[in-house]
Image (tube, rainbow, N blue to C red; front, side, top):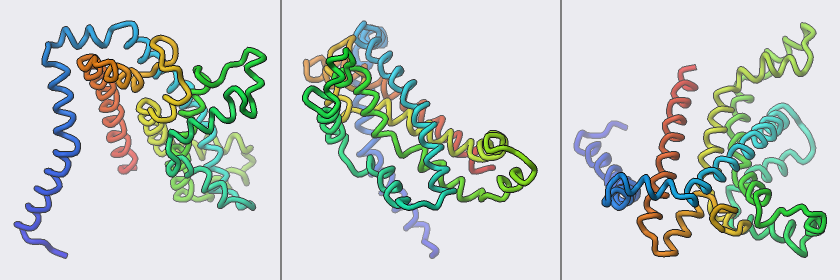
Length: 267
């Protein structure tokens, strides 16, 4: 369908206004509030011990969650794309479950399992603390980021087919050799894109993490929890500064996603 010039301009104007109201104006307001007292004040607010600890904890969680989700995601994608087994539909549904379940429910479920009085609450008697500590926050983040690697890698595996893998097997290659030399290079862009999405989601997670953490500065407070805590304490400049720091990290991740997507499209 060919649209007239006036119609195209009208559609573009509506789309730009929609994006401006929902995205540009709110982010612009945060940036204005962040730097209204000067850039020196901004750096002072993001270099406090609480802010440094929050950023460090967020990065630690990302460093733990991403490798685990990469291994699980690739294995699961291979099983779904190459396998034909009973219960495959159930596995597909479980992978997509984090998209449907509220993160708050995830946090409550983790407390019921790992908290005091839960199924695995006896671990606390052995000195193993899960809930209201780093392990619980990691578990919550793993759950909410579970689908990204799987859903980026599985379509690529379907697209490339099995011909090259079967040819390698006929030439005497082992399963590991086939994976490292044939499969992994073929899925590298899908895997990388899934990793970037996982990083972005892990950095910005709030609902599940706040349920399973103490939200105490320097102990179990991530960057997103710091923003919420500062705002609740009426420290609005501090909340704006932490929000801007988180936004800068998100923009870097978004730019990386864009670059990777273009490279993947060219190939």
